[in-house]
Amino acid sequence: VLHMDRNDYYGGESTSLNLAKIWKRFKGSDTTPDHLGVSKEYNVDMVPKFMMANGALVRVLIRTSVTKYLNFKAVDGSFVYNNGKIHKVPATDVEALKSNLMGLFEKRRARKFFIYVQDYEEDDAKSHEGLDLHKVTTRELISKYGLEDDTVDFIGHALALHRDDNYLDEPAIDTVKRMKLYAESLARFQGGSPYIYPLYGLGELPQAFARLSAVYGGTYMLNKPECKVEFDESGKAFGVTSEGETAKCKKVVCDPSYLPDKVKKVGRVARAICIMKHPIPDTKDSHSVQIILPKKQLKRKSDMYVFCCSYAHNVAPKGKFVAFVSTEAETDKPEIELKPGIDLLGPVEETFFDMYDRFEPVNAAEEDNCFLTTSYDATTHFETTVKDVLALYSKITGKELDLSVDLNAASAGENDAA
Image (cartoon, rainbow, N blue to C red; front, side, top):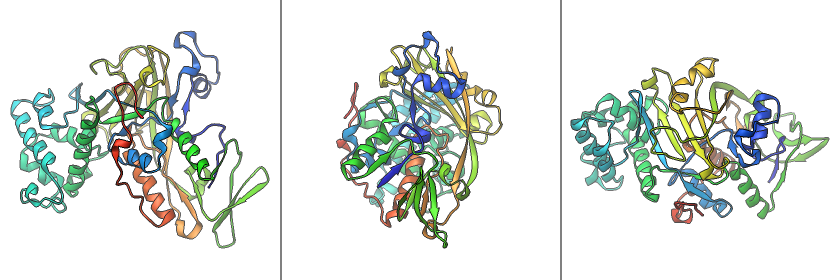
């Protein structure tokens, strides 16, 4: 594998930047104010996402042994926005009974639903209670328990991590599996959330894969300007040219920016990066946290996401917190559109606003040998991205990646994880 990158850093769009580079990118100068601390102590992700502890990405990292190059730490909190306040996301029957999200009778109904999901095993017909979840829709399953709309909202968006409400009319098996993944990930570290995150930020991920690739004879070339994909008369890619040299290849794998004529624009992401000197209020002083603001709560077409981490994950100097607010853009005014999420943060020392287009490939890889990824979405977790990568892996190799691994090979302790 030859990996060429036009940038002088790893990770492309999803890199982690120090403060000077962020300042340069958004303000045009690399002189940063003293009160924000030392530039090199910042490792700020441009596309911040947490990993589900038992999720597909962690399984990929274990399967490829990339975990030996990374240190993880559990994320403190997982919250949902409801009726103007933020609440811890309840993931089990016990947590449902303690939650302020619901009234007394609703708690009991939710508890019964959570018990059904916890006990459900696909290959144990007894646990199905006469329901075929491959045929029954999520809406039908939920109506059996008589849950209120607000309860359905946090279950669908903050627990099952759906991005829209189409899931309600799709087979319930998918939502039940997603809820089980959340609860099992949460139980894994007895922490306040099901998520983990690498020390020093996500920029560590591409570097870890580059190191692994080198072990197997792969070559990584940074700072390769104008990587031009070469095609033969039949439209098949046969190489990539940079600085007058052409590397011959059978397959080209790249992000949408390298082959703009083979993708279509499918949306835009609006985001704010905020530097603070305190945790987000009402998150129990969490040093790392995700808050999901379901679209219905905001009367929007898509959810809004808040991601916060701090010096606890070595992404900022001592005492500093970095928060992101992101959503699928519905206007071209991010500072107005992101206000509901920014309002949750409390006083902010510095804010950077940004928008970027999202693309999806429209080419036929079997005809042109080009395998393109989909742009990163607004979610603050990796579940959607990994799905895309695994589908791409199958397209390239013709086989599925076996993800049945020993999850104990990657652990996240209170202080760090190996």
